View 1: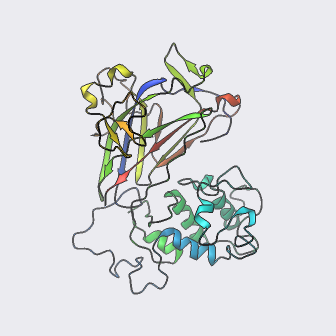
View 2 (view 1 turned 60 degrees about the vertical axis):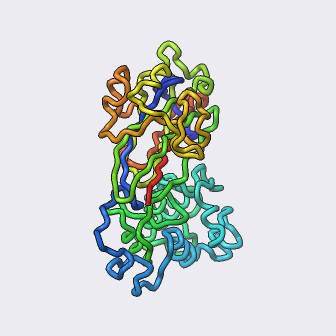
View 3 (view 1 turned 90 degrees about the vertical axis):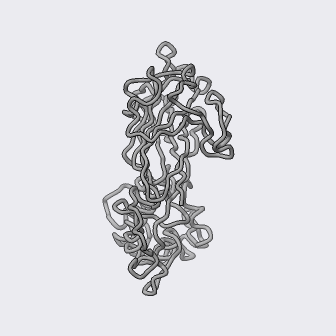
Length: 377
């Protein structure tokens, strides 16, 4: 969700319509792709030098964040009493029992940015403060670069922080790189030993305030370890009572939005959200298959797509189709452009489309899209 002002508004989708999503991701690691395990291989043997069970490892951790806590926050002096220890400089406590809860999705006192924005290093105030010291002049920040009065982080340590944030800033688990999904790269950057990379579930986006936008929550689906899927799934949304009248065009059956934020688990490498161009009268078309609750406490149960509350914390979704792009997916009356990204689309796991400058405050509507993944082990 963003609070910046915008200028030009654009049509998003009708106030009551079917939205389609096409997504692709690789499972079984913290990276975007994960190769099949080699039969008979054992990732805990010394041939995997980054693994904590390797007898050659002198500095072992059970998660990426645990390594960052010790190697960077503690050994770089950030947890000294006069800094982010008992003094909690800037309201930030980086001591082991408090650091994570003080960092992730917590707004900083010196900026409009959160200290850590999962998936977005460039919107994470802590990372920008560290980068300002390691790479002087590369970013503009308020206050002093960090660590203040101490040597800056090395380029390797800074890159480790960046990768951890980009992969969702998880508290537990070991994140992998983009090339092969392994934890070796970040382990080497930290000079530490880490377990093999695990599938990471990112913190979902909080819904925007009612007067600022709406949220499209993508249904979850199972992604097997070491596999890759490209799927299409439909959900029905009715925002007719949520969108202020001045942002609706009832003659065209659309409303307007100016900016969006998309968030997916880091295993995901693209997502397209599209308006099917049809309404509630088509929800029972055989092309959609059986509608069931996907995710949540009623996962797998039949649901009524027109009942927005029928699945509790889950989402009522159509049958999940494994299909390359969603072009041609759904009833024949659907838009011919389905699958090309009319609402939102990204070739990355996270994406912010900021509002345009210059609009009135009332046009700060934001559509946030949360794609959830349920990797199997």
